[in-house]
Structures are given as C-alpha cells and as structure tokens.
Length: 405
Ligand SMILES: [Fe+2]
Image 1: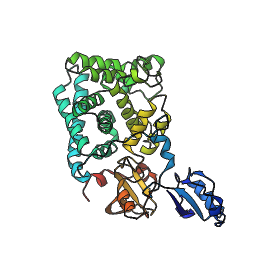
Image 2: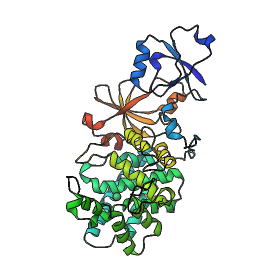
Image 3: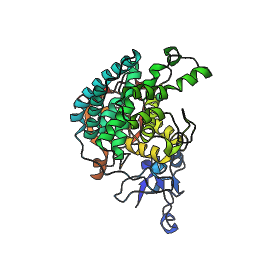
Image 4: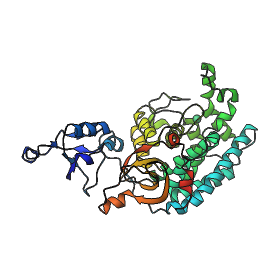
C-alpha cells in the first residue's frame, strides 16, 4: 500500500515512492525522489528544500515499514527469512520475578564451577544441568526477561556474567529457532561452559592489559581445546556440548581457531554460541571499553556476515533479538524515554516499552505501551526515534525493569 505523509512525518527507513506524473504534477511541493530515507539529516534536507509531502510505501495493514531492515531480514537469495509463529508467553512482569532469581542463582553457580575447575576439581555436572534447566524454562515462558537481565548485569562480575549471558542468549535464540527442550539444555550447558578452558591459561596472560605477544596469543587461542579436554575428562558431558566448546571461535570463512573450520563443518551449537558470545562481549562494559548499544552491536555483527558468521544465521539472530532488543533504552518522538521490555519479531520497530523518564530525564510514573497494539488501534502518534545510551546519562535501568509498575 502507499500512503501520503507530510514531510514532518518522514522518518529514516521509510521508502519514498514515485507515483505517475498526473498525481504529483498537481502537488508542487511533493518530494518524489524514490528510495529509502537513510538518516535524519536526509529528512532535514528534504524539509529545508521546502517540500511538504511525500508518498511512502506501507504494509498491507497500513503499518510503516523500515526498509533499512530489508537486508537484515532477507536471505542471501533475497527470500525473506521466515519467522516462527509467536508462542504464548507468560507476562513479562510475572516472569521477571522468577527470572531474576534464576539469573542470580546461575551467577553463583558460574562462580562455583570456575572456582572448582581452577582448583582442579570436577564440574558439578548435575547442578549445572539444573541451573541451565531453569534458564531454559524461563526462556520458554518469556525470553525477554533473560535478555533484559543479561543487559543489566554488573560490570565487576563480567567473567561470571558472561558465562550466564551467553548461555541465556544462546538458549533464547535456540528456542526461537525451534530447538527442543533437551537440545536447549545441552546448548545452554555449552554456552555456560564455553570459556572454561581459560582457567587453564595462565592468569597473567588472561588479565594482561597490554597487547599480547604472539606466543601469549597462541596460548589464549588454545582455550577452546583446554575447555573441551576439561569437560571430556568428566565423562558425562555429551559430544555435542564438547564440540560446541571446541568450535566456539571457529568462523564461517575459515579464519577462526583452533581448526580453521568453515561454515557447516563448525558444530551447530558452536555457531549459536559464537553469535551470543560476540553480542554479549560487544554490549558489555569492560575495564578497557564502553558497551556498544544493542542495535549498533547487531549492525556490527551484520557487517561480519560471510566472515565470522553464516549470513542467514546472523540475520535470524538479529530477527530474534529485534532492532530494539529487550533492555534497550529508547528515545521517543515525544521526547520521553522508555525501556524496551518485549521485542516484536514480526514488527521489529514496534516493541512493548515502559516509558520511564520525561524529556529532561526526570523519572515519571511508568507507563506500559505496546506500540504495535497502539498502531493497530490507529494511534500513530508514538514512535521510537533512536536507541539511547543509559551510561551516558548515568542511568541504571535495573530497578525500572525489575520492579512492578
Ligand atoms: Fe572463548
């Protein structure tokens, strides 16, 4: 469908279409150059040139589409990457209570197994399965809660939080891909233990701030094999988990390590873990770098398609997390700020949000808004303009997401 909009309504991502000349000749201030609006400055230019209207492409239901997403949601042959039908979910606020406990317990467990392995003890495999089982249950009930929590973890605990975040993100993605319950538990175990081999690398190398020497880097690159050996000695870890740990730094184009495997030769769970690993590393604060905003991290990862990642798999990952992943702070066209608490895979620009701050960043009574439902009711007044960085405003989003109301 095509809709006429005023230039004031034009937004990046909208596709301007050119109609037959009989229509636009009678509208002298009509902007007619066909194509996708790429940025806000392009909109500013169009406005400055005095144009008043444009015709844009909208969906069958009249919804505004962001055509910048086309590259992200289409397969290499141009066909759309299919989205599994949405499953019934437990409401976010209800699941958050449980997910928070699950996440905190999992953090304790991660600390324990890393500590045990450092001391040469066995990993408590039964407790590990129990921990991941709870993560899987939570992901099935409501995946957004875990994604939010993964973005709220403390910087001091990065090593442990990273194990749990990778497990949680991998499980959420695996669930989205339609993996069965047992498979999700094995995927989660591999995610939680993917870097266990780092305990076998001397800590002076792991903690070194300066650039690593070639020999030191070669030693770091052995951690997937070390991890696989540690777990293989347990005797109870399944082969698919071992393979995932061994292959988690292999890359689609064969430039990874340790075996320089390519594409489908890389173990399937390892390919999922590698996506979760990179996403969590990019979006986490570290002592030597600030976190990158989730939507920017996904754009960077999209740029790594065909090199680090299978192009179709990275697109599915982006589709699963959404353009505004759960836990993102967003600025609205009203000037107010909200936190995304539930993504919307079929309408990625219209997630559910909790509006929490006014335009001066003063807290306001939280208001829950489902942008897709509002739009379906004809309310097109509210929309997300951009992601905002909570760190630059010294904001801690955790209380906003974990408390009711
Ligand atoms: Fe690793």
